[in-house]
Image (cartoon, rainbow, N blue to C red):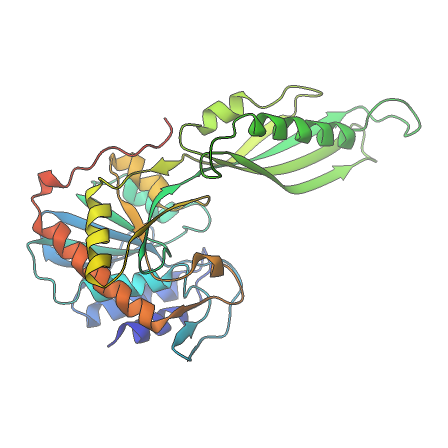
Amino acid sequence: MDEATVLERLVRRYSPSGAEGPAVAEFLRLARGLGYATHADRVGNGVATVGRGRPRVLFLGHIDTVEGDRPVARRRGRVHGRGAVDAKGPLAAALGAGVGLRGPGSYRVVAAVGEETDSRGARHLARGPAPDAVIVGEPSGWDGVTVGYKGDLRFAAEFRRPRTHWGSPYPTAADLAVAWTGRLRAVVAARAGPSPFRSPGAKLVGFASDPAADPEVARLQFDVRLPPGLSTTELLAELPAEPLRPRVRTTVRIEAFETGRSDPVVRALEEGIRAAGGRPTLWRKSGTSDLNVVGPAWGLGGAAYGPGDARLDHTSRESVSVAELRRSVRVLRTAVRRLTARPSDGLTPPRSAAAP
């Protein structure tokens, strides 16, 4: 069974977050057919393993997708469909990379649930024993390696004030909410660094008001992306108190993550890219991944890797090149064999540069 067939079968199982069961079952069937020992853990992650003992190399992919099923097809050398890029393409490549691996060491591929929402699959794994090395499955392009992700702080801010006549000189709750948003943007701008990755960014993603209520109510929702060195705790402490301190309720808190070229996983992936005829590029992204969750929890570095153009994530044009998919299998096979051949004590990388 070739990699493109594996990917097409995975993509045909539509699996938005919270409804991953049929896709996990398909992942386990495919993995068994490729020679893996398989099981599903108690939160629903699909787990496929080859080899035994240490070093233990983990490929942490995710099986869930955003909402919005798309037609699945293989045409003109590409596999089209929801999840082809984010992130069933990386999962298919990871399964192909472990075929025939017999040790030393072990290689485990996890199809995690919930990455697009609360990372519940990765958070479950993070409470367990750490592997010796971790690669997270996200699109980087076959010749790219992602070594950094921003943190993410999402919160709701609610403003209340006594209702007044609109002809009065007093601001409404909506007025105060708009003014507060400007001050939040000023706080974020004051933290700007030398590059977009080193700078925070804030987006207003929701606004609702009820001017007929007494008191008046205005509710805002924000998504703030944080660079390494700025924690969610620090940003929350810097939220403006004027012109009216809102009630704040956080919904997502994920700290930034960054490693570097000296990390053993990064070096192994770069070796795989060169062996496949490429020139490695290191990426730092404004999004988040399960690497933000497991890296700090396990005290590991690691990197994210997988075929696909990340600009197609979550879009109606989501598709991945079959040629790129096959090249990614070669890259991962080289990287995994390098990592499993090393003594486990030689795989301990520097701690990530996640914000404290």
